[in-house]
Length: 334
Image 1 (spheres, rainbow, N blue to C red):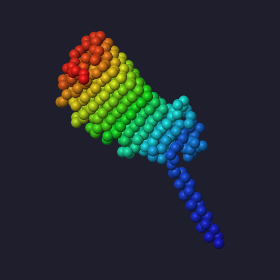
Image 2: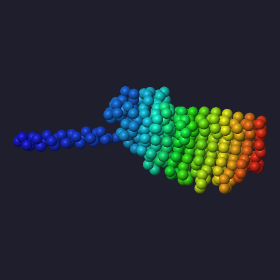
Image 3: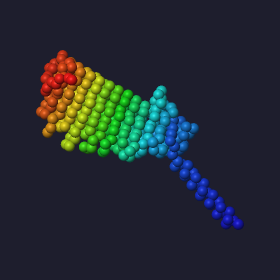
Image 4: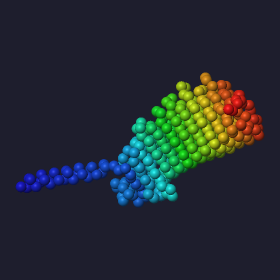
């Protein structure tokens, strides 16, 4: 009799243990974080977690981590499709300390990651956001600032495949490089819209194969070049720049260097830089087409190096520079 009771007790305890383990490992479509949360909680609305990293463990692939109240929530490495959502009126910060990065994306080939409303600050750390793998990264209404160590960036997009980057309504300021785009030869794409890239050493720096679109944005007061578009061996780059203010950069406003680069710049103002637009090719030409832009009050308006071509219709205003420079050729607008 006693043996039967003991066996029943052990069986019930084992079953209870399995139930607890199953509950602890369960994930949800939406999880929540709060300054009053605890990382041992279920990360539910009623029992939120404290940190992004803890909430990520309990979030379904394709799910959302939602910030309930203003606080700092710690660095996180993202390995699946997920959204981190900061509602309007709430501050959600990530302080990035020495030898670490703020948000690292090491997701799967079909995973999309969305970061909305974050403030990421350097406290001696390396990079604000680093994208390595995944289908796409969306950075919306974020502020990333202060990553000044050599070789670092506020936002580093370095995919090993045909990944996509989208940045919108964000502030990228005070870093060694504001936005760094780099890949090893596989075509990728980056679209940056309605964003301020300011007071960095380099504003937007791309050593990139694929497509880059920059529009409706400010690239201002960087101590080096505002926008650098460059290719390495075997790379080809197609870039479209539209409705920009590129001003007061210590280096060139637009610096195009490398082979197989085609750039179209339209409806933009390029003012008070060293050279407004500089283009130099490599083994094959680099060509920049200018349409309906104002290039003025730079030390030099436009300039080309070997295998660099600047072609333009007469709709551009290139005047009032220390030296205006000359374009490679004009074409007739149709």
